[in-house]
Image (tube, rainbow, N blue to C red; front, side, top):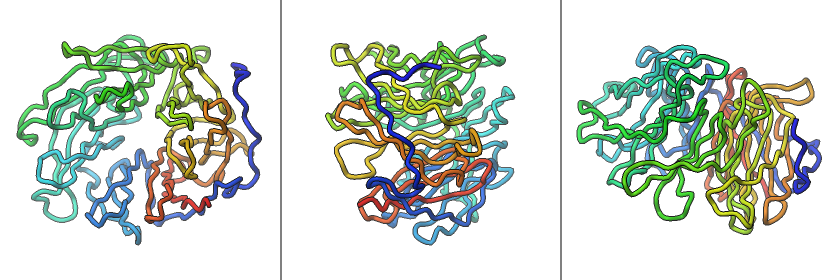
Length: 401
C-alpha cells in the first residue's frame, strides 16, 4: 500500500452520518425498486423546469417525476438485450424533444456482445418509446454526447470497458476502441459515421468530455489500466493523448484508474478525482505541480483507502464556498464497521493539500451511480444515489447552512 504523501492531511471520520461541520443532508428513500440501477441522470423530462430523476436499470429506463416522484417507464423488458448499462440524453432527431442513446447487451462484460441503440418518444404508441439500432460495439460500458469534432451536432462518445477479444485478468490482447459517432441526417436509417479517438488503452471504466485545456474545444479525460489521460483533437483530425495521472500501478491484477471527474479548488485550479485501481479501494485526487506544464504527470494524493469497490464520482459545490466538494459512492461493505454508501471530501485549502472526509448514511445504499443537482430550487445541490445490492433510490437533500 502506498504511503500518503506528506502534503496531504486527512481528517478523522466524522461520527454523525448526516450532519458534520456545516455539511448537512436529509435522506429520503423513494418507492421505486431497481434491479441494478446502472446509471442515474437529473434531467427535466416534462418541461416544467424541475429536475427529474432518470435511471437506466437492467431491463428498463424509468424517470421519477419531481416532486411526487411518480415512476414513468419509457423502456421496458424485451425492448433491448439485457443488461441496459448506460444511457446518454440528446435531441437526436432534431424535433426539439429529448431522446436517449442506450448501451445494452452488457452481461457483466463477460460476453463479446454490446448493442447501441437510440430511443425516442416521437410516434411512440403508449408509454414505451420507440427503439432504433445504431451499431454493435464490444462491451460498451459508458456513453455520452459531446461535440468533440466541432460541427453543428454533438457526437455520441462510446467507451467500451474491454478491447475486442480480450481475456482477464489483464485484458491485454487489444486496446479499447474509444470512438465518436456522428448523428446522421436521418438517424433512424442512416449509418452513424465513426471517428476513432484511441485504441491503445486497456480496461477503460469511464471517461469525461470536458474543455480541459480552456481553448473552447471539448477534450476527453479517460481512466484506464494505464492511468488518466487527456485526449485532444488535432488540426489534422487525429487525436493526441497525454498522461496526467499514473493510476495505481502497484496493485494486481486490477490496476490503473477507474471512474474520473474534474473539480475546482478555491484558487481556481482543477483537480482530477478517480477511484483506483479498477473497481478499487482508493479515492485519489491529482493536482498539477506549480512548476509543471498542463500536459505532464500530476501529483497523486490518496484521500481514502478504507472502502471496497468505489464506483461513483462527482464534483460539485455543496456548501457555497469557493471550491467544489468531491462526492463518492461506495458499492460494497469493506467490513461490518466500514460500510458502503456516500462519502464527501471537502477541500480545506486553496491548493487542494487537505480534504476533510464526511461519511453520509453508511450502509443505506450500495451505490452503483450517483448524480448531483438542485432538485427543489433552493439553490443547493442535492445528491441522488442508486443502489445495486440494495436495489433502491435515495435522495440526500442538502440542508447545509
